[in-house]
Image (cartoon, rainbow, N blue to C red; front, side, top):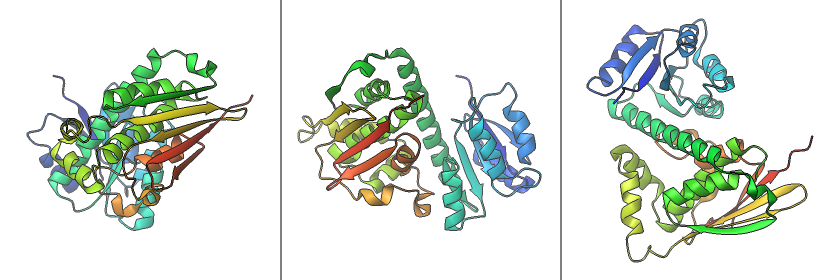
Length: 298
């Protein structure tokens, strides 16, 4: 199996040494840079980096400047960027997350915290790649439908339907990620009642998928499904996603929360709201969400 490459960017040699020690014995291949300009040159080379671990405060080109370049680059914008820094004020953390950093680690941090975040970043990146592949395989017949209803139960079905629903949207590449997040959320938190803290621990233990399969096999969950409907209107397409759970405290997840910046989960709904849809609104107790995508006009 080919080793995955990580790019570590930090202007302090001591910090680079510590991070390299953290990855000793792992399957990753590491490259390092001491400023954003050197890192940018490496990113333009032939090596495809699975993730970038990026210091925020550096000379020549700082972490925020490099992050901006990465997110503006068509072939790099989906590369997970993990910001590690001493700048841990809430407004700084929120700024980094809003700019596209995958997660934040405030120095000093423990080895396991870094490895957990990297594993989560790579798992989400692999899921994104799989979604994009499924998107390419789907046709555009959904654009001809005025309305429709669907239901699903498993993560595989959620991925397939996310790719299908995205074809009804003007920018499928943006929409597919938001649909996937909301459908998975309806399965794990809605129907299977996996709490936020439980998911964080499952991510740390690398047992998230295993626990979903275990809970879906329980008698009380075997018949639970997620229900999806869509309606095409003159100016927009409306989608409603409803699970059979008791709901959740959805308001705190609509925006980036610096207090959750160090957890391996918790950003999906905010990202979907910001990047995938024109509007996202939870209804009632939170077991139903309505998203709006406007038609594009030339």
